[in-house]
Image 1 (spheres, helix red, strand yellow):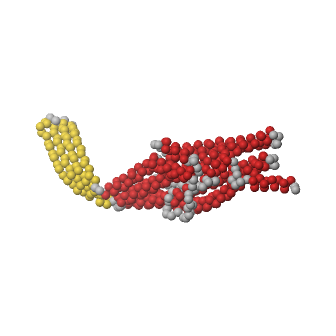
Image 2: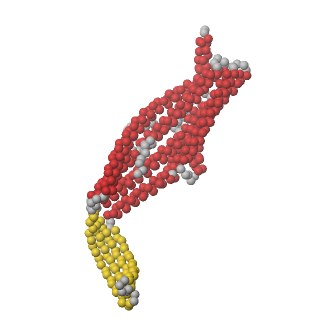
Amino acid sequence: MSSSSSWILVLLAALAAAPGYAQTKRMQDVAKLLGLDASKDSAAAKEAEAAMARLVKRGMDSHPALKIREAELQASRARVDAAQGHYQPTLSVNASARQEQRQDLNNEEKSQADGHSMSLVLRENLWRGGQDAGQVDLARQDATLAEIRKFHESEGLTFRVTEAALDYNFRYFRQLIDAASLADAEELRALAERKFQAGQVGKIDIHLAGMRESAARSSAARASIERQQAYHKLLNVLGPQESPEGLKQDIEALTQAALPLPEALPELKPVPGPTLMEKSSIAQQKRAEITLDQNYRRRFMPQIDLVGTLGRDQNRSWLLDDADQKALSKANGTSLQLEFSWNLWDRSQDHLIRAAAAEKNAAHREVEVARHEVNMETERLRNLIAELHQSLGYSRAAYQQAGQLYDAQRRLYETGVIGLQPLMDAEREKREAIGNWQQSMHELQLSLLHWQALERGYLASGSIREG
């Protein structure tokens, strides 16, 4: 029998002796926490999911951004009431007092006078060419936009907190994977040293094992940094919290198990109805149309007002040399007048009309862009979710086979059949297999998060105009 045939028989014997998922205990424990070796419906996974829901509620209850949007909405509704007030008459009081001194230059006589007046003025707009109705429509569109911005902020906060929680959960267990990989590398180095001391291998195995350990240590350090950054990102998106102890417990629950996938994947049907970004663009377009119409009315329509006045005047005058001779006059009166005004030339209003027309055209394009982005994102997510879900099966099979290969290669190395390099390759394959499964799982979770947000009308990659 040839030497190559003997080596194959030894390898097959080692593989046959290796049980399913025959890996080191430490990587098995990590796999169970990830849901790879255990049911995704474990109690720890369910608690991690419940903790994420509590974190979302914490953000919704206390984040200042939502309070800002609520205040803006209340202000916009008050402006609707203010615009409707233009239909009501205005009532004002005008009062004045005067005192004056005069000197006649011809006869040098000096005189003095004083007086006061008061009037009650009632003004009622009879016709402004529909401008009052336009102001109400503008205020209502602003209120609609404020409501859309509030919902967009609410959905955005839900998305950001969930995304940050998923990322922290992912980074925490990625650190555990790298820690287990480092422990495997340290074990390989110790094994290589024992075999070197026994004279079974050369010093090259010591160098190879040391190089692998250094690389694993570097990866573990990097994973620790990324976990810390994910932790601070989660705290940042949550905003100020009044109960830090409860917050700490919820974040700690995210480290007990990997967050599971939903019970069933969505059907990935086309998103029904317009998204918040589309609604905002449509409202902006409507507002631009109303603004253009208002500018035309201001430029070309006359204005008619009815003004009623009830007044009272009292005046006195006298010579300073004869203060006893004072002239006193009193008057009461009412007036009713119809005021008509019409701008025949207003260059600034002409420019405003052109500006409003341009804004209307821009808003129309925004609607087209919003619909295009939603269609593209819907198609992207549908393909990505299907492909990632399929890749999980491949990653699970690769993980199982890599574990079996690693145990078989380790036995072959311990018996001196192979050198260290094939064992190091198998160890790296094992680490990459579980890492690839976790990465696919994380990307699928994020994609499902994007899809669920899209079903609620929130496009994470899009934005809405503030003005």
